[in-house]
Amino acid sequence: MEPPAAPAAEPAGVPAVGRNWPVGGRPRVLRGWEPPATVYGRGHRGVDLAAAPGAPVRAVAAGRVSFAGRVAGKGVVSVELPGTGEPPLRTTYEPVLASVAKGDSVAAGAVVGTVEPAGSHCTAPCLHWGLLRGDTYLDPLALLPPWLLHRGPSRLLPVLGVPLPE
Image: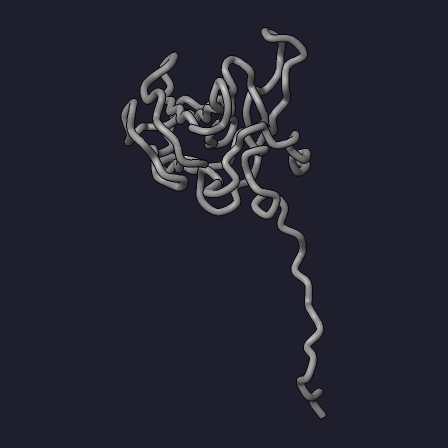
């Protein structure tokens, strides 16, 4: 699969610090964000990240849990990000067995639950990660700083002042 397209411009009011991937390491993006042409049109309103069942799911940024429960049989956790404008940004994670409750404050990187073994719409185990402002879906990859998104190839740098071997 091709690497994901570059994310859209960063949403206004996004916290500048304390952002990380919701699952460990740098997960493979199985399916990227595909905004619908209309409110009810086809699209993919988030990104799917490769994640094993039972893997910890972490808050991408600090916030307050606005929902932790089941929707259509799937575990869902939503975290509202304060100081991100009106209405505030909200991240969503599914399918997740929540370890937090509505109203809990979470730090960036805090575990909010674990990936459930069932309930995913992916063909391989995954975490669906979404971002909303009100009812408008945005590209969640826009929350991550560029250095987390793009790891270039390793480069050898010149070594100065070290004698060459004879």
